[in-house]
Image (cartoon, rainbow, N blue to C red; front, side, top):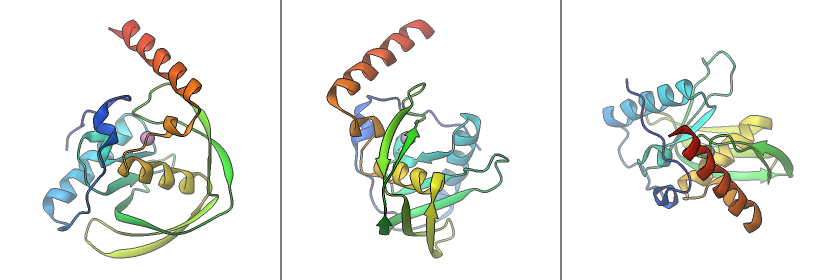
Length: 167
Ligand code: NI
């Protein structure tokens, strides 16, 4: 397994739209393992392939505190979404920034697992937020881009400053 470098906002490659995974094979499963390891070591609760510069429709999520409930979503599709809720979100591509974002409260998603088996999942709470956040990445959208332009400008300035300080 390997820890992969995570693209940092505002890297333009975060805006690429991910392509459907046509063949789920050993290469896909290796990427799943590497992405899981990358997410756990960060640590984070979700990672989209886009964030590791692989532009395919693949997401890993684990919201458990014990890091033993890995969920893999390949070619995820949102079948239904209900309600609305504001939650504070963060992102491994936007370190140190936490902002309130409005999303659906309940979602139903259909996807394939790492063996190509199709499944449908109903989610709420943190899992629902996480699924929507990661599916946005696959469309080339970073959560801070849902905020006002003023906030985005402030966030970019703050990140620049943070990066200067850690050099
Ligand atoms: Ni993210």
